[in-house]
Image (cartoon, rainbow, N blue to C red; front, side):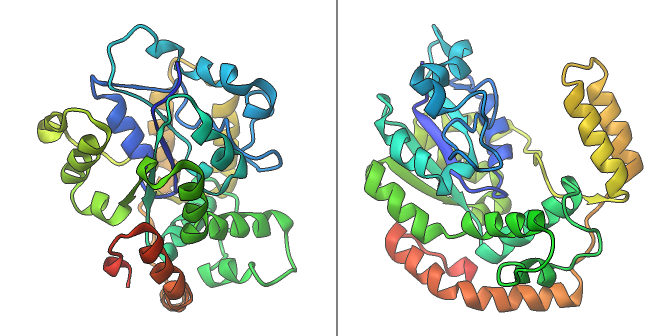
Amino acid sequence: MLPNVIIAGAPKCGTSSIFVWLSAHPEVCVSSRKETRYFMDAGHPLFDPEANFSNAGLAGYARFFAPCVGRDLRVVLEATPGYIDQETAIRHIPEIETRPLNLFVLRKPTERIYSAFKNAKNNLAQLPKEMSFREFIELRENGAGDPAYHRLCRLAFSTTSYAEHLAKWIAAAGRANIRIFLFEDLKKDPAAFMRRLSCCIGIAAGFWDTRAFTAVNASRRTKSPVLHRLARRLMAAAPGFPGKGALIKAYELVNTGKPFSPAPEDTRARAELDERFRPATEELEKIAGIDLSCWK
């Protein structure tokens, strides 16, 4: 069995929450792993050498949906938001026999990059604690410093080049197989967002009338990056540990807190970045045929 709906973008736009919420719907079956990453390009940091399209084709992809076989379903779903800028995904996903509907949840470019920055700095502890947002975005033009930091910056900007990537997706899959949603609508009214999404993919929208919506994978502040990196390594080394859930909660009480409010310099840097993205936002409005006045 293969999916007929794929959330293909974009990172840090609420896709983890949407995937988890949809997994509870009785008419939906989700992949055994939220991000299969099966169509990532070779050389990308998220490319899985053990499970990818180049090595195993669609037969290998179908293994992620084995739990869905034999069930009466309307939607078989996968979500890898990193697909948005991947040539392997753009080329081969439209060839899948189910002709999957490709969903893209987009966020105001500056806010998406800022969220990616906070995630890399806090949730993943991949950036120095003292690095400012301005220093992060300047890595795009500055060739000095740690190559790993430059890679994170390039990835953040690449996946935010929405107009460029969606033009390729529309050309490859056809406009009828592309649906675009906004993170801002999700944040404003999760229930209304999920009802609209449900109508789009053909499942009962009334399911959400009595549901609670808890955000998944939200950015948070890490008090000690060293302790956080150690905790991530330990959790990765013992994925089936029976007390993992309780241990994670205890760890979060000790080493995480509410995100800091943006520093004034970060606020200025975000405003400048907004201006840089204005022409791209106007281009996206033309390509996608959607109103993006909430980004301006």
